[in-house]
Length: 319
Ligand code: NCD
Image (cartoon, rainbow, N blue to C red; front, side, top):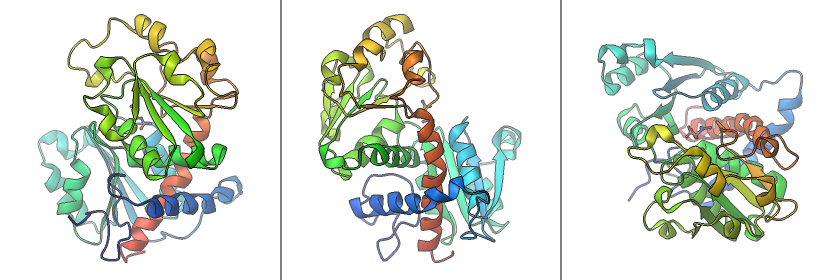
């Protein structure tokens, strides 16, 4: 089946999911992001790559980091950015998603960045929008969050260099996490040695091993000797029934504590896509501690999103 994300030459023109993308494409994103990294420290933080382009942030769900780093990334590429506030837009007056898209197309925009509670919303827009417009998925339901996964891969590569030697543990609410799904695909595509997921049975999807991971229900066992620890938030807004006794009980059994951190390799890094819930999935001192790279992930989000935006627009023959 033709991958909707690729142009006729097999290059990325939309960025909707890690699924179906090659190691070469993922590596190209990481390398392009790296080429932007020295720029972030300069006085003048702009390059003219997307001058004259109009990028629309369409966030149908709340976001802090993702929306603002997309906005900054677009600005640093010299594009014009429109951030639509859905709460005060015509969507709240009953306008359909397709009609919203048609109206924005009529304003000659070049890219949609979409976050939506429904899985597949980005794919739907990519299928239905004008061919010169690139669509980036900024998180769709429980399905995918590919730009988050790529900024995580960038951060891992920055600290650990070679994926083929790495053991990575993802801990927490895997069941509801679009971030975990995209991370697992990216880690496996980049050739990671071992991907582990650690969670209570109620927070693991059924047949989770088919995603290419080893599952653990005991955090002490799962943390043994890992190089990278990725913590996830309990996505209570997505839980339709009581899957956990209490947050206190969860922290007792699955929270990352100083004691447990010692089970991982001495130079292991601790990551989290945010928002973090201190004392629920992670001890505060670890979030702020020397092994935490949580804020580095946020900074890296800008250059990785710059890379994804510039590559997709270039490959769409429009940049
Ligand atoms: C994540 C998301 O929205 O999927 N956050 C993010 O984008 N940084 C994870 C979460 O909400 O827990």
